Length: 422
Ligand code: PMP
Image (cartoon, rainbow, N blue to C red):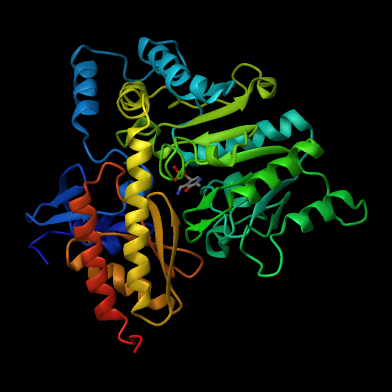
């Protein structure tokens, strides 16, 4: 421990605080994949602001664009007024992201968090279809507001709602059941007028469940799900808050499946700089909002629009980042696979630069992340029992940094998992 003064956090900040308990130091500065605390210690970041810092901390080009904008007194707060920053972002998003992918989405700016985007998506799906029910999946995570919680799996988080969470049904995610992929069951209950399942307004899905334990849906499962929805007039919402913006390789995590969701939610890394911002994308025919029907004071975080546009230009005008993410992801997966061979009760799964190290004994995962912190690596756990160490480095991390973090992790596993194979 450093000489860090923590008293004010313990005295004044609510018990609800979380990450500061796992990582008990006071951070001061950060750049790229490194954070520095006030005691002068350096920490390699395998957490990336829970997926909000795909391009690293204080990315120099994005920072320069932001400083220029602030220095010329560009609009900081704009509700949903038209601004140069917003126009530039919309034009860039259309040119760099939507048009090359043949996507004809309208763009909504909800409040700046992932949960805001999810709430807007659920509302819109209900309005468009005139139905109330939503189908979600086991182990899903969509945020902490009431609508988002109603489609979230975790019992502890749901209990915090304090009211019944209604009008949703959880179906088995890909891989949840060993003998069926769950799609057949969904088809059966949706087509059986006596099943007790009303036709839902929408199905909401993550292509990889980040908080749920790095559960990866197969592409053909996603295609079957999209097909199931299309055939029954059910809207498909892909929550790309954590897996979008290149986390799994392509900009949208659903691209490889060749599907076009009706509604897409984006947040976290869309601003590129860790600034609060979210988007809801909807097929043109679903844009049935009336003016102001869904609103919010902080929809117009213009500095975030500046860094978002700069990030799209820098990282998505070509496929270099997508390719390097896939290469780094494969490398990480290979190293984790090698690691699992040496110990009992250890396995790995993931896609692109979201990779999980899964412990049969859940308590070991938390011990590994604690030891990793002591040795200068920030990495968190996820999953129903916090049994998965979730690796979420910046996509811009260097090969040497990636290996350094993997070395720390491997050494921590070696200390905690005493029961070696052979
Ligand atoms: N959806 C997904 C898939 C997420 O991973 C998260 C956050 N972890 C959210 C929604 C909620 O985002 P926020 O915390 O910004 O409300």
